[in-house]
Image 1 (cartoon, rainbow, N blue to C red):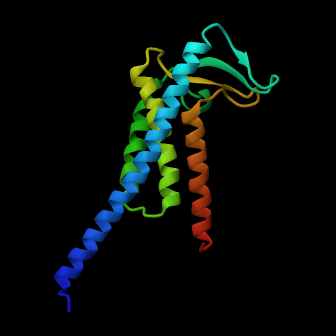
Image 2: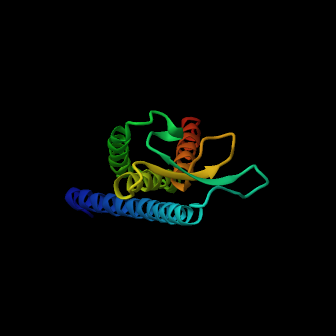
Image 3: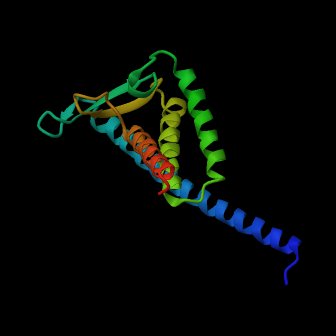
Length: 168
């Protein structure tokens, strides 16, 4: 028969192992998003320097825009605010993920985390003074892979939250 101390120790080890697996999934998803985001931005900067390219009969155009504001170009001219806010959100995701063991939640958080990191990389390491956007749907603000992943991740979080509220 196990002592209560060894049972508590086993439970603590199991929780730590689960947390590590969660961070691993979160990290892999986020790293894939950052890689895809940065590669596509680099390719866009290199190939679209001569001007926009229509991809789908005027429904999708690839064009370089530099967004110094927040999502969808709001609050232009205050990039420092969005850098600090994004770093805060990244920290919040990392803290939240310690308590998450559901793969769907971790996938969604990884998408948001990777998108946030991808846009922070632009703000910090690129000499453009903002985030590189290049996909223009003509009815939606110009965006990038990071933005797509953030929106998809938040959508998944909302769906998972609604499902959990219904007992699913």
